[in-house]
Image (cartoon, rainbow, N blue to C red; front, side, top):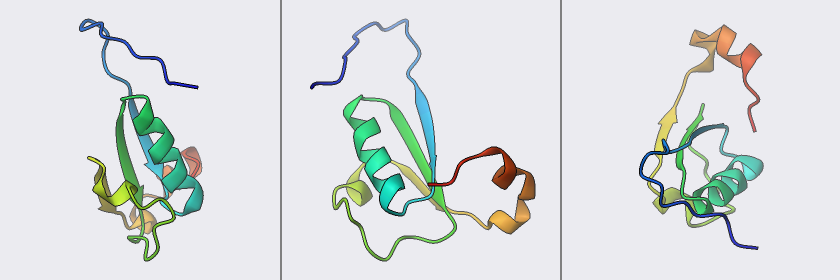
Length: 80
């Protein structure tokens, strides 16, 4: 199955934030990128092992985040 593709320049591009880059987060990033959407990813540490080898080379905004500084963030988002 191929992802839908839109060339509509008036449609704003979707933006996704993946919280957590363990197994599920890495696979989520890879699938979302197939849909030609913008994806940013955060985690409290950079993964030592990449299950999806192409994820580190994708154009993402990868950042380490000290989640203890943002306790409300942890209550409102699902970390994968």
